[in-house]
Length: 348
Image (tube, rainbow, N blue to C red):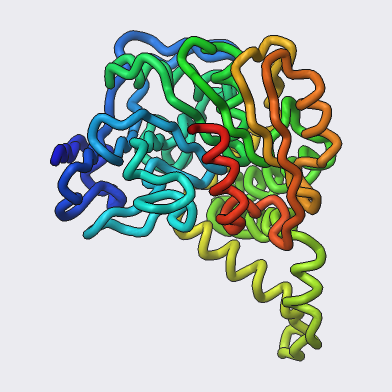
């Protein structure tokens, strides 16, 4: 058993660091690593130092698969005994779709985010971050960990954009990319929704109400993550009359989710990574690494047409899996059986 706990100031208050014993034969390293030297940024400028919070967990000596999620996801992908539940618990872990009895899972906190990797503090400005910067940070971390090549990189949503950036810029570092609900560019309609969300947060920050602005932005975002069919099934009931007017079932759901999100994340980090999504562009013709794509017919944020275009323009081998899901863009969190087959074919 290998177990490392980092006690740096940025990590000491982080409840997602492991607590308790990991199973025999498993490796679990959770730490914050400072990358040496300055860190140049894709859109200009540089950071004097970058602290990368990571977690490497799974069968000792097994091939390493990087797993990256949306902008809210961190390095704690799955849990072990005595640990909190991971954000992709249903699909990743011992005996699951991505079996950690066979692979080690590398998770990171994104640059510019709300967790323990370098990012904006309260009221602080932070440079513009690209998916290419996230990929460069992963490569720097791999050098520290002695990982020459990832057996795979599984990325969903923003994490899929980072996986594509990694495949384009660092092909020797990656054997296979699995990209779920992410394309070579961001669709303008998706940018339209996120632009309004960022405007909420920036306006609120300017008036000392950053958390309230973030709650409203997240409420709007929730309306884009799932399918209209799911909302029809769950929220078609009558509104409730209150002293302040009528309150609709879907309204209660959205605002509750927004408030819960705002209690955990920093508005400045949300603006940084939301903008990073909309700046995303990669050149499919420059990607020769084998890629497996997963597209969701009901995905409002990443249209099926964009995923098919990416498939057709990729230079290397590519397989596109099209699924239908009630959960829309969030299907990667729910469709465990589909992902089991996808992961097996891509990684075996």
